Image (tube, rainbow over all chains, first blue to last red; front, top):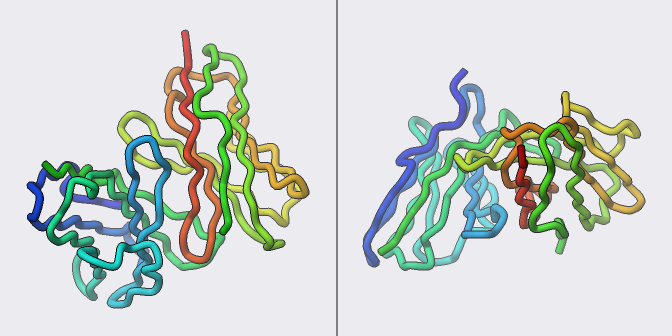
Length: 115
Length: 112
């Protein structure tokens, strides 16, 4: 049973470009969470999605960031017009059901570097 | 705001010895879960152990165990018989709604 898959593992963008990060949850999981980790920090929640729905985006910056989880295909975290402060590791996690007691299984992360 | 505090930025342990990583949290809920995740140099986040707050018994997974003190809102991780492969960042996490709130982590160094 494959774990959570993320690609690319490393992404380099110049300021002003767009970054697209992909996440395929574990088989049988329909709940996806995105987190951001800045250097020397813990993970910070960004957004929680179920298939075709954004449930909680309270941690998502209001501008330039968007997320989707279509009926078919991976979840996408999109960052438009990237700035140097967007450089971070972005982690996706999935769970089979939602709830505060559910274990979230993490992918290997995407390291975004903005030049 | 609910917070998770890890007061030890770095810890060191000798191989085969025991080390305890501390974590405190703040919540007004009575029933909840707590997690410890490990992040090795590969930076993959790996679940180490999970504790259900309503259970009196401390969770154990092989060499990893917790000391859960609900009244004190303390959730420490004990690693017995430390191995070189245990070297990593360790994060304590507490669920808030759908999200996990993570502490800032403790970097564990294991020396031969």
